[in-house]
Image (cartoon, rainbow, N blue to C red; front, side):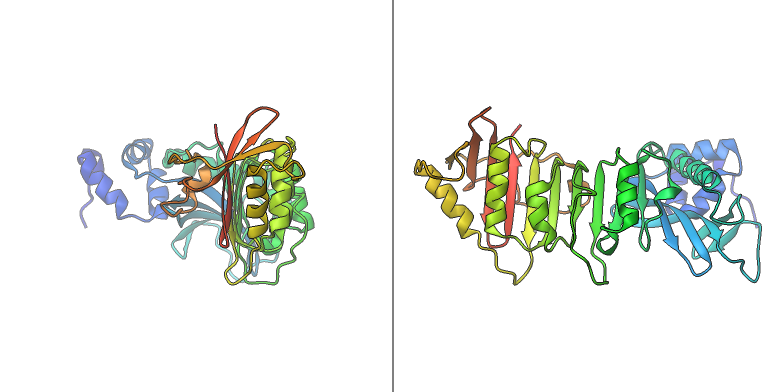
Length: 351
């Protein structure tokens, strides 16, 4: 077999070669020499993020570094920390399910400082190869929350299933990762305890794909900037409470909230429309005394700039505010638009 002198090939050819290699193969190739790594960095395709997934295995815990391309996750390299030894231990590199498996520098999962250093080192290297800022650390916890695997204040994005959201370990995660700016809560197959949201109500951006009864708490106690809540059990009463709280400057961080009602679940949105129409009629006894309500006739598109748009594909007319209600806060004349129907509630604060 003849060797291919990739250093002598044009960039366009090397780009095609890299597109036909798995992420693990690219990772291994980058370690062969500094020149090869430099060539890869110059020609590598664009990835959206490099993250770390911590999952429970039969023999212990696996930390896998992955790349994300157009919402598809591809694993690059993994570290395995064993609770009990395998029958056959190989201290060399392995290829498991197209993932390079690197032996851990510690024999088990008890030496957390050493584990954190090794995970950080591998994550930083993969970020460098794929030209991603290493400080934008994304983590995924598909089976359990292993908050202790990351240094305090380093996690910027976190993905967890809803069944783990109100656990003791979830509370410790959010207490330690105050710099988290995006939380994604995935829908799980297990039975979900719809508890309180105090643990994560201050995360700036939250995507919750199975909100259910948590929608009442998020409508009235969310202290972040942007929220996307799916499969909600919306009630007109709590929507009106949100409007009152915002009018009284008690939810002043809020920039946008999009809540989709659960299919076949009734939403008494008429109660909200009734209050808004009543306020437009200059009623003095209305619960929204700190607001003015208008219905502009001009066509407007809301300038949505949240990172949520990188994680969710919105319908084309989502940000078309034509026909929506405008609420204007008396204290500072801040303006927001409300879009509401039996299927959704949307709240957009104008810049």
